[in-house]
Image 1 (cartoon, rainbow, N blue to C red):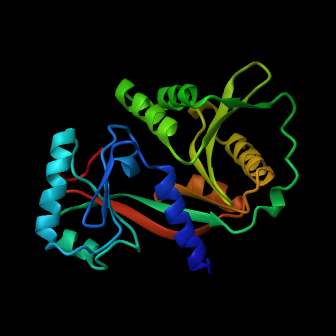
Image 2: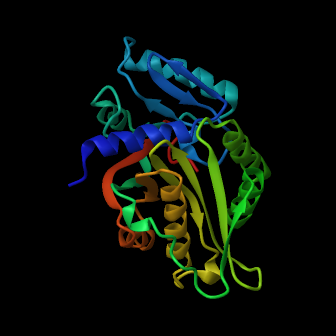
Amino acid sequence: MVDQALAHRAEAAGLNASAPPQQGEVEGWLIRLSPGKAKRSRCINALAAGQLPLDDLLARCQSSFDKAGLPLIVRLTPFSQPADLDAQLAAKGWPAFDAADVMVLADLQAFASPPALPQGQVLLAVENSRYAEIVGALRGSSVRAIAAHAERMAASSVPYQGFVLQSAAGQLLACGQLAQEGQITGIYDVFTPEEYRGKGHGQTLCAALLAQAQSQGAREAYLQVGSDNPVAQRLYAGLGFEFAYRYHYRSPHGVVD
């Protein structure tokens, strides 16, 4: 069973690493208004119960999202407050969508020695704005979303490090990022182009990222993966990650892309 203290550290680290410049607080609720693709940077994180009735609190938040031109989205975790917030929003008819699993790795000692890359492959560091362009193009993100991703990384108090795994011929096999805060590191935005999937490139990349983090003083790691993505979950489990908790989103606008 995963140590709940580690689960809490992973949640706190994930919040810190995903903080956009467009962030505020209402009654202990963290409001994020980035126009980027990542929902964790354009949603409400309900960190405290607050003193206002729920409808009043939601109305104040709705005003902020309306001004930003974004749909109101609430991220629900086992740590959300009030404790019955998910049930209250479900009772309002707000659907749940985009469930994701947070997985944690309690000890990076196994990655103390960098793994040897397959012959001809090379791991290259990439500047953050360029990384946003690379992964955004692979995902088909809009110009606005790519710019917001780059802006968030540039403003983040938690430094990001982007890497690409390339073949000897310069083909991009996989890419991913580290966001390291002290002794805990997060793995973000891992992507393998469709034509190179199923060949172990994602696992090679992630093992190299964990070795990089361990060499920089990290002792534990976390990541977020879609609950409906068993292939990626098996990949991360093969590296030693364990399920810690699940979160999802709700919105009065229905399922939001």
